[in-house]
Length: 183
Image 1 (cartoon, one colour):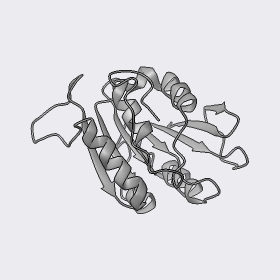
Image 2 (cartoon, helix red, strand yellow):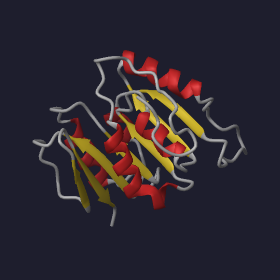
Image 3 (cartoon, helix red, strand yellow):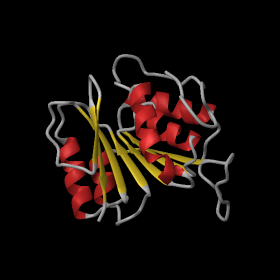
Image 4 (cartoon, one colour):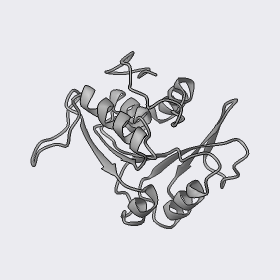
């Protein structure tokens, strides 16, 4: 698994093996292409981050800061290794992100209580890719509809998982990606 585009294109990422289903490269390319105009300087949230591939891809393509939320031990270990390999860390007080100085924080937390505490527009873009077959995605979307914690919410889900209609849906052989925009 690797970063596909931007600052860190072709950098390899650590993977925890078969226990985690990372977002495929073609899916990340399509999502980032769709969001490219909004990525510049964005604060992104990567829920159910796994290896961090989606959030790191966003940083590589222009986002300024990313918060990664992951609870699984194997995925968390790989995520921390990937963040460390790219020398990503939280910014110090008064420090601003730049094209080369990116900020990242890793939270060992369950995504549902994490988003329950967020205010509207806490982030610019949020990504969610919970385990397929889980109802966690429905709860994330419900929370976002009540309090849009990011103007853009991009969710990856199984093709047979019915989700509310978004502003755009990308269809792949193994998954769908639905994009929501706050009103």
